Length: 121
Length: 106
Image 1 (cartoon, chains in turn orange, purple):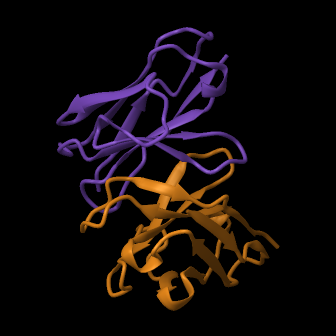
Image 2 (cartoon, rainbow over the protein chains, first blue to last red):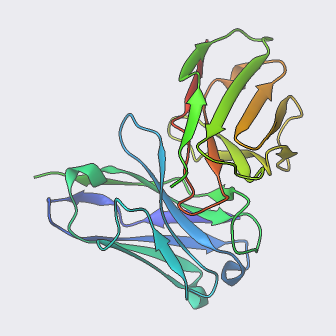
């Protein structure tokens, strides 16, 4: 299994960015997918997840109403649209595959290497 | 939201030491707990899920235990490649919250 994030970079406060995560070596449409971030000097923070079919999503309170998770199973790709970005969103963003196929994950068993998002003027 | 509290926040140990990290949930999580190892510049790595199930390929010196609200990760004999930050995560109820991390240093 390989997950490869892209789309990170420098963005001004209030700006937008879309992250992508391309999956390979797995039947992408079978698994729920997640975004997890790590701000500089901080721990891991779960951001959002999406069901295998894309019909159910959830978000951390810190990003609700600003971020939108989506997926294109025909392209084995996960997305995170980030709007109204602030300095608190500066972090490495990882995509992660859910372990198991039930309604809740058992953990996250495959992770990408991460993409850095820096929000600064 | 379920809060996860790890202790200690950091520890110093030597190769060969037995290391124990604890994780306490703010409510019962029915053993739906995972442990990760994270090294700088690398992707986090799943070590344990279901509180005590070893992920494929993870060395047997890692073990997990616990129930209810209290869980433990044990490294039976610390190796040089084990120096990293370790996180617990509950997968009982969304949001899937992580502990604040435990840095294992030389």
